[in-house]
Amino acid sequence: MNSLTKRTWLDKLDDLLKANLLHLRSNFERLRNGLAKCRDYIFNFLENPAIPPDNNASERGTEN
Image (tube, rainbow, N blue to C red):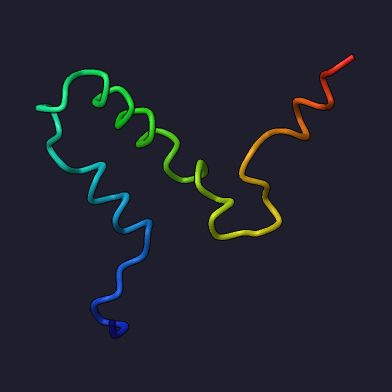
């Protein structure tokens, strides 16, 4: 795949968020709307290896 046709995962996510998926029911529509609201920061761990993909450290910090 050359650089002109290569699409990033973020481009693909944007296409999915723009797609008319109402036929998949309201539950998926709520998921799509939620992803659209936090699109700019929810997947930061995919591009920055210093960011963990989970919140285990935060949860351990709240344990007794």
